[in-house]
Amino acid sequence: PTTDPQDRSKIDETEATRMVRYAIDHGVNYVDTAYPYHNGESERFVGRVLQGGYREKVNLATKLPMWAIEKEEDAERILNEQLEKLQTDHIDFYLFHGLRKPRWETVQSLKLLDWAETALADGRIHHLGFSFHDDTETLKTIIDAYSGWVADAIQRLRLDMAVQRVCGEAPAEMLVEPSWSCASRRMLGIIERRLVQRGTRQGTDWLPHGPVHPHGQRPASL
Image (spheres, rainbow, N blue to C red):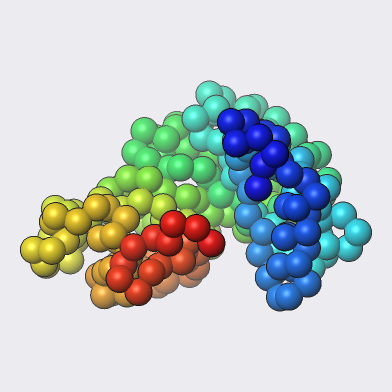
């Protein structure tokens, strides 16, 4: 929640703190944020809300903003900045944010996996993953390229012709529905059968980006 609907940086700290701590007190143990959320204020808020013993109760996830990375030093600087904002000495799940083909090429050209391995070794991050915004061929390429992935937050899959290429089947209803609805409705049937199994064979865990309505639609609000 925010105090100003026109300014996402104006977090309603009292209400948001009540919500987050209520959730943790009732069993939620995974807290996700990212560098750009709430115009850069989300990580600072999460760092504050997890004080008072709450940090020790959760697995904390945040993300490296791939669009801001032009050299390896950018990744190093941003990770250290995130640790300071979050008031922690480590991030449990660190995701390359919004990978698509051009950003994956950046990961490769700047050897960011090697950089991430260093951060894993020194304990600043405990697990490495990525969020994803591209087609299934790119997803397969990314999964196959590194055996250390532990989390995929798949936010959008274009499942029209890509489904036919990957899975050998493309039911007619899938070709006319929105991307989110396609991914949601067929998640267990097509995505799990091929893509999830492919990643799981390499030890990859999967984090759903949001709940799915029984009819394959994303809820308007939670």
